[in-house]
Image (cartoon, rainbow, N blue to C red; front, side, top):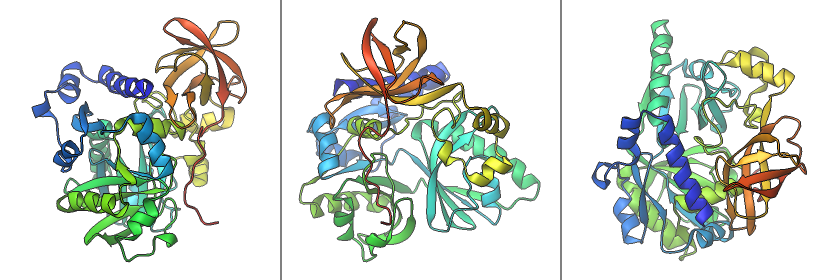
Length: 407
């Protein structure tokens, strides 16, 4: 548990260090009164939520149960997360696909309507500005969600490029969904519980797919996706219906689906081998180095046409100099910034996320090492508080994923 909490604190601290100090102080360490609150804030308090500042928002890190128990319950039963701090937006217009393809590595044109993918917004050097799940609703409508901590820079980046694109006659506009809230329902009970609240057949909605449908009487955007490695959904709901929907989900699960905070969310995503922007991906890390080569569409590899394409396509051809890998280790859990050494004591990389896995009952971590030392089974030393402990490169995900896909 301490590993996860510590890690969460580190992620906040690390992002703060990168930002302008005054703005960062305002955004992350603001007084309670300055923090933004989701529409579920009072609902969290009523359910024993322990609120902490996160990316300018007051968010629950945990509820009455421990982070350990909460993590295990998600995989055994289910979890409901308030992720309304994240930013949902729609791009519309007949040129919204070619516009977005200038900014991300995905083959957006190749997506069938009603499907989506994880992608990365890149900069001119091929580094990651943010990761995002994007969905092609229709050929002239893209729905995407960006990270709360990256909202301001992402929106400024998109807006700057949109102005240039429109000045050349491109047809694209946007709408930021500040009138909606976002809930994530994850775990084996996610589909059976949600099915009670909608007439649509959820067994026909597979991982990565999107539908607009009525849930608990409210018109929602439903994506079968998540950040835990489990089957589940992200539900964009009109804010005035969010509390009722959360109540209905908890009620229909008969107490088995629990409200879950940022602490367990972090443990779950680490067990699933998923990146946290600001820790495992940053402005100077490319998608290839981050192990997200699969997210670069085949057509995009051939044609390029996105920011930083020269750097990324060269890395695809020649291989990157560093790679993101998983580790298991002995001793205390590795921390963000823990040094990784080879068996002779030479520096070979750095841990970016680490903690004790509540489900596997052992230390897990991810980080970057020099290429050639990234093969599973490679032995290493990981420094924690100045002392070296045995570690070994391990395939990710650490916990098998259970995404709902056609058999």
